[in-house]
Image 1: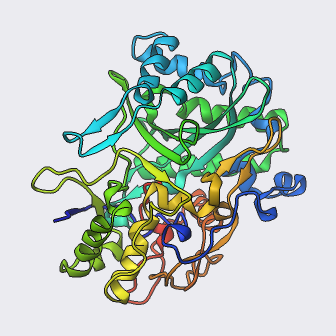
Image 2: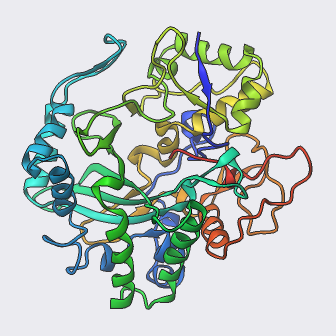
Length: 442
């Protein structure tokens, strides 16, 4: 039997799954609405302090070129030194996770060798063709006690650097990677104080002339503080190099041991979406286990080992265009169907499948051009089922009965904590807090 252990994971990963549940056609990331105009890039604070994608910033010679603090080689060299290794040794060891088969739990969850992708990764690194395409503020991933933003902070959110590989002729490769750093806390500042400090620093970026020296200096001061080996939580990769489908992997980082391929957060093994038996087992568990549906809707569960030691989380998430990999779309009743949608929302592949064949939230079409964002990152996105717990908060709307606004969620969180307003939203008794205030893993 499946086992899901209670944990503060969050009401919704809300990375709009849609096509994974097979209910609404997935738009391509190349749709017009996914492109950012120069005017938006300069005027909308979202692109100045939350999702920073302007090439004038991400490819500035001062910080993003060889020797600069944001250049991939600089970042990876710092990680390697913390492990007592050279950058070359560090990269070779990392590439081994593609070069050789990866098995877990006696081969119950196996990932085949992919030497071609390992070679592409190393070639791009040696050629200096791993480009920074985005600096992302994920302060919204802050965790609170009892998922209550008026309570104490358990863990700070994240600052992220996203890189993309390209060929020697500058064609873009289908390979992105993201370094996810925890925002550090000052010794003389409590966790809630640190959250407010980080929120104000990020928010203030929008007050400087965009791409001017003051803006770049302030942004670099932020990245210098979080982009250190001791703050790195994990690296995630997303590629379609050596296969005919997209594959996502997760590599937690330890200052002593380096990178190690582990199971993807909140993403069960492939059997639960690639076989009828696995899908039926998931449906039965969610439909028949007392209390599970309410726990899922409340956002208090996480996939973990069951009492028999069988691992539920999977080593990779895959996106196959033939539809063989999909989450069950229907439960045995309305409640289990909604719970299944929420479970799927929180998975890595469910989140990224929303974006059609490219399977990426941030990517480029051409070298030197701004990154293209998925529709999910740009505003209201239609959900495949009713969204529970969406009271009128008196702020710009984050969710309605049918749509989730990821962009507004991140803006609201930053604004609320930059001004120190962490009071619990006034909602009717028995009503769940907004999903925007629940802990998320992606």
